[in-house]
Image 1 (cartoon, helix red, strand yellow):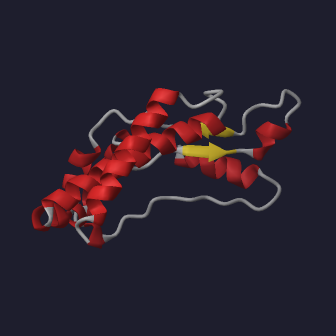
Image 2 (image 1 turned 120 degrees about the vertical axis):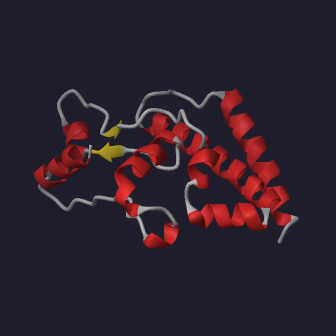
Length: 149
């Protein structure tokens, strides 16, 4: 996916922007396994793989310029977060707050995915039930987090 994105960026006659995830030792995991960890971040919905190619929009057939390269999340975001020291510290020191923030992050990931699917032309409109569930979870998590500050 990264190679394809770089090829498309290089082929575009104007300026190109490539946004990539960059790990840091402060994230608190063994960086020698970064490729596996990054794959797991995508599977959990923490990261999404996508690309925008304006050439597709300018093509005669008027294709969709936004391509989602990753599948919808299928793994637990909480389980992925537990592998990183930066999240595990909060889970140990303030478990209730960590749980509320994890639920908020999961809700955000679902909404972000729906939004990108809509922009990519995969859905004409956001499913009401999914949007309502994500909004309700976000409200509950925000209230729980506010009470702990």
